Amino acid sequence: MSNYTKTVDFAAKDALASGNAQKLIKGAEINTEFANIETAVATKADTASPSFTGTTTIATLSVSGNATITGTLDAATIDGGTY
Image (cartoon, rainbow, N blue to C red; front, side):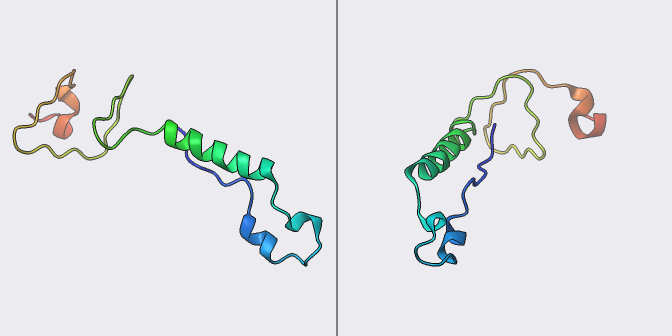
């Protein structure tokens, strides 16, 4: 899983004087930003029907209605060990 990290501060280029070569926005800079966004999005779980492998840690889980949970649960870790 990867979070998006901005590589180029395009807003900072606005403060540069006209004619400054650093003020130009280059295709390679835009390509890098889109590649970073693509990686971050592709490595996150979908909101609808996510699929996880390995060990999944959930900070807070609320189950209501006719929900079904499949897999293995360690009862010793549910509600501090009480069940």
